[in-house]
Length: 94
Image 1: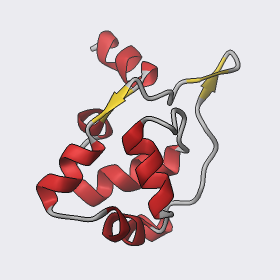
Image 2: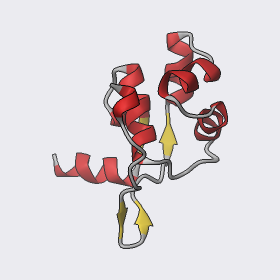
Image 3: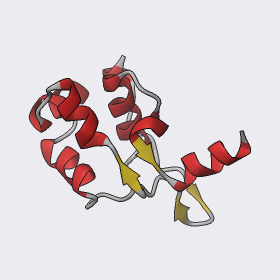
Image 4: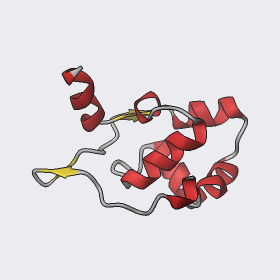
């Protein structure tokens, strides 16, 4: 399932990235599952450096496909792992 997700474009609204991560729980989930950055990266076919950059907040606007792959790997909704303006916008509408 994870391998079938292509690298889709960022979700952009008005020229701004709506995937701009304000905070994330990626490291928390990864450690809870007992996975190294290398293991998670190989499971979802991205680089370990990408995982590291997301965890450290260096990557603020990852690709949609990356967020989806991570959520699928943990069997969690994206909003449980990442908090972004898009997630905030959607949650406010509920």
